[in-house]
Image (cartoon, rainbow, N blue to C red; front, side):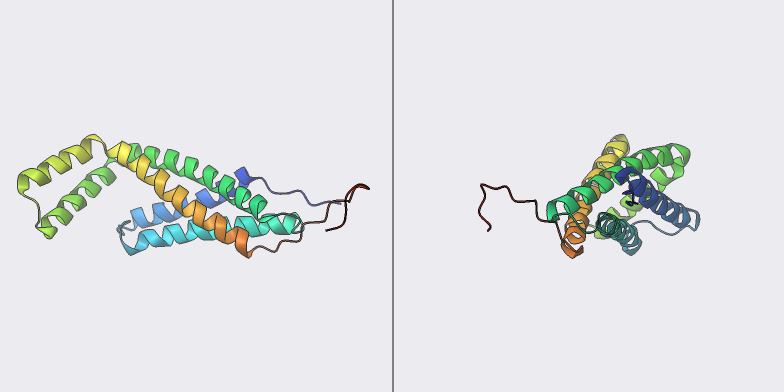
Length: 175
């Protein structure tokens, strides 16, 4: 009996659930999401994509090429990206204080750098408040797809490849 290959959607949902639980734990534990902790979330994401590619290789008996593995990893990461964008939009609506805390942190950061006037800081905060959702969605999309490409490349590179040779036709010379 041949083993059925787990779909990219299923793997994407599993990885997304891990990331969602991680973000909820950090939020309710009042741990700042930016800084070193955000890299832990990306590590879960990258690790999940690499695991997904390796598991795909195992399920397909390593009968795939680098391109097949990369495509599989990128498809999984596309599912994760879409789910995480939807989750973050819902999260902002359910917990509006997150937006206010993020804007407050941005103001503190600008004040600490001490290279902007108070008018410039107010304008930047006003722009951030106005386009917060656009920045959130755009930033999430760019970051996840950037790390997705890296993770899919790593996953495709480290997964064993033993593609079967296609049967030769009579008019072809062996190579």
